[in-house]
Structure formats: structure tokens, C-alpha cells
Image (cartoon, rainbow, N blue to C red):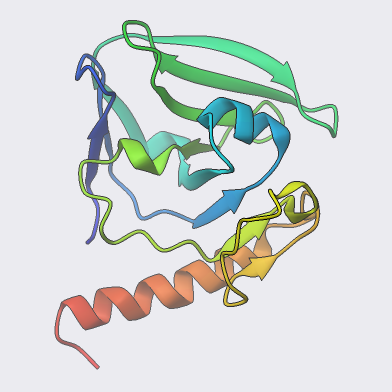
Length: 161
């Protein structure tokens, strides 16, 4: 799968397109993500903000502080409430798409998990992912691994070696 990537909310009021390749995909076990997803964890697909276009519908927004004190904005469908994305005020050039809202999710494969210190005891995502007990101070390793593995998947899907 290559850009563009299309997606939308549950009620189909909101539609979006991402016109660039993602920077990384990770699983977060923090309590905020558990609450947001109403599950054991949430996933985030980091993309350049400039590559995201909302093509239909209206997003509402609310904000909260992260544990670091940075402001986090969360945007969701005004009609059905599906979370579409979130981002940090301190890093406006990137947003995190909630990848379950993509039309095609078959190609998704996270490379990391964060806030493992807050993971539910029964969750086992294996040892193949980069793992961080809290928020990693840098995203470099996650980004590098994603680019390496995503490039390999792109080559495989196009019959290149």
C-alpha cells in the first residue's frame, strides 16, 4: 500500500486523505489511550500534518495536557464521535491518525509500543516490537524502524527484491 491513504469515521460523515507516507505506527498503552479507545491500547499512525486533507464532514476538537505538560489536541467526528486524529501543540508539523479509521488496514504493522508500564497484564504483543515503559524521549528509533520495514513491504508488494 502506498499513499494516498483514505479513511473516515463510522457514520461516514467525515472523510479524509493522507497524501504522504507515514513516519511510524505504534501502540500506546497509556491510560488516556485506553480510555479513548475503550480498550487495552490505541494505535497511532504519525503523518505530516500538511499531507492530511479532510475532504468531507466536520471535526470537533478538545484538548488535554499530556503527562509531559504539552497540550494534546484530539479531533473527532462531530456526528458520531469517532476519533480521527490527535497531535501535540509542541509538534504541529505532525499528527497521529487513528489507523482503524483507514479504509484499508490490512497493511498496518506497528513497530513499537509505548507506555508498557501501563499495559494490561493480559496483553501480549510479542517481543518483536520496540518497547518503552513510558513516553520515549525521541521518536528516531521508531521512525527509522518503520521506514526500513515499510520500505521492505513496499518492495515486496511491487515484486522488487
